[in-house]
Image (tube, rainbow, N blue to C red; front, side):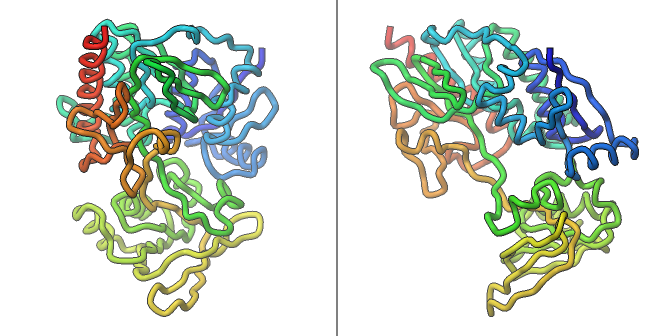
Length: 395
């Protein structure tokens, strides 16, 4: 049987997400840790041309990075190549189908399963944003915990109550067929359920400028924790002015030689982070600029900026561009079914109820104001209880 080989780093959130996904699917893999092994790191770059982790091979066939693995998984191609047979009954009409494997989705699945409702969790991966969070210090009862460890605890607790799961599946559509809701998956599968709880969360925005896709993994970075060590003593630009950009600047201040922080306006991150960045000796603020193009040869060597006031261009000589420009809700498969606000967030009431009977939503995909882990978990519980109430009044 073919086998997955994975290049990873000791603290790489996307490596942790990939491992959680593979373990949840029961897929064994070989791991090559390049954290302290310079020879292995050079080997990875030579084999893949990428300065980013994780990187995956199927035997000797190069698959790509995390996004490539997730795509192969979502389309069912990975299962096919590994000879994995589906264990979830697709003919069954579930009481509850939960979309999303972050805090909101995992909590919703746990509460629904505890209510003795047949429950299936459908998620591209486990953890969402929490899965790529280094340390969490504001989750009640856990003074300090890593994101992947918190996700592992939540998943195991939900699974303990009998939740079924389809991990590595991307939901592409939701339709209503009488009393049943139908989830269409990228792999061609369909899930039928009496109720659906959408907890698909949010994901990182991209710049959508020339050069961004071309140099992804070759100087374009979306995770400073994962790929920052590859830019030791380098000159980099961090694009963004919010908390994620500030965190990246603090982290890279201990690694890079020079750091430009590029933002259209004033920094809007949490005050303690902004203070740290202002005091960071390697940081060069560039406020009032927006990126228009990423340039390079084999790898990135320049970022072209435009002054937002006078439209004049400025070119930075950089070795890497770290993109930290916020998040957008993953609600695209729902836009023609439920009401959303201008940002694409699903509009819900205090119980996670949408405008569609039997369809609920929770967490960062909704228009609720506070985007916090504990809030998302609470909303997941609330939505599951609302789904239970809905079901008992339908019988």
